[in-house]
Length: 201
Length: 156
Ligand code: FES
Ligand code: FES
Image (cartoon, rainbow over all chains, first blue to last red; front, side):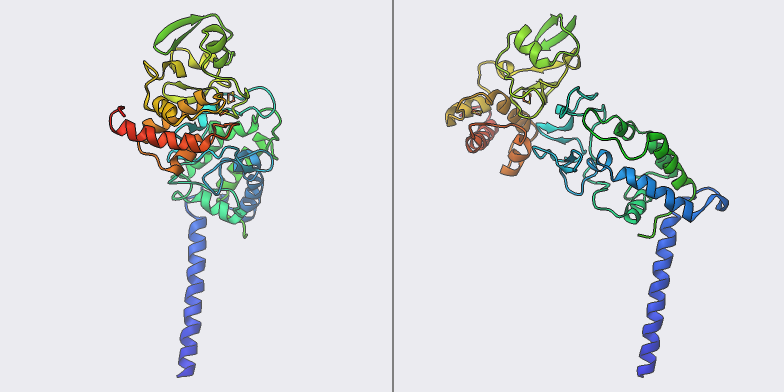
């Protein structure tokens, strides 16, 4: 009897493990990333680590906060005066992003940086970067349910989004992301085109 | 020349397109109800409405306002009788008064978008308007009162 239970438990564990493996590999393959020959998990995950260094820099993470208030500055502290995300990511009431953030950077230190499309992710798709491990962020970015409904094509194109590119024009007194834009875009494409693999951790 | 529509009147002003809207309002159009506090979008003293949004005129270039509708505190109501203005008087909100043009203009956007705000809604809307005299409790009280009056159709 005992023996039988033990076997059943072992079988259960094996089934559970198999389940985990299936779940992981299917999330790797969320989009058909080209032909099998272009897939390379090592190259892909390595490229993602470069991407990750940019996405976790203040220029990106400050508008991908874990909470509903954006971050600001080189230390990614909560934004002064606590502007709220709002449903559409553009603020609330008298505290909408564009009330201060203009279409362009304003000259001078500590002046509001600008972009015509200044906003956070919307409330129903927060796309949080803050606090995410490389693995968590890679999986989030490849899943249309958590990446803003982007398929592979849209994900590739996202590197050309005006607000993403705006990270390399941060305004006076703000550090640039750790890679040049060209390096970032190359790593972004490499990551996706070699299979969009998530690093192990 | 930049054409501005301010408080329902059209103006053609000769200004550098980079000039802050606040400068144009105060120094060219002599609408001095809107105040200069910090000049760097930190205090809210300079809030005006641009197509209904509570923009900070110290960092808004006058060119951005071209061809759009600007409303300043002078134009918020015909006879200073916006429910917020009346509530401000009733509660005697101001201390030195310097911040209150901006406070009222911000609160007006709140009441338009949310006619019955909670304390949390008021905090979310007003957190960018600083009052160095600390009149925040009276501001909150007056917004609630104005909301109640507005619900009754602007009367008392
Ligand atoms: S003067 Fe514009 S925000 Fe302070
Ligand atoms: S009443 Fe003095 S700054 Fe607000």
